[in-house]
Image (cartoon, rainbow, N blue to C red; front, side, top):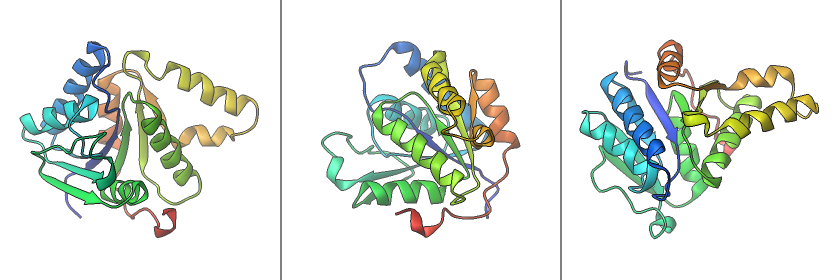
Length: 194
């Protein structure tokens, strides 16, 4: 085990988002790299995915990308990563990202990011991993997700204890504190997730 925590970053690939999300994502990548954290992400070069990778690289961070070969038209591979894995399926991508990581960090994103969040939380609920999950509610982007999750709990489709499976942070300083106090992962995600 290394002494470098690896953060799996889930975020959007769309370049057509408000500048405030781009700026905050750049600061996130910079802050993670400056603290010596390694990033694992989806391997793309556009949108917030590209910004967080570029920012970390610019600040001497290690960035590992994992991208399926079939979505190269949609998410162009980043050409300058520390390491890039090209895999054959989305399932393989998700499992590899999960196994590389000690912590999961969710930034603003679209349907793919929501899919990744709900899947990784469900895997934790089922005991397939014990890794920290942090939702960065940047500029209140995930405000409605908080309401949705509360409604799921209020209607008894989720146990109160399940709210402890993840944490939602409104500020980067909170995110960094949660990462700092999170333990290193002591196991891979179990093989039966794919």
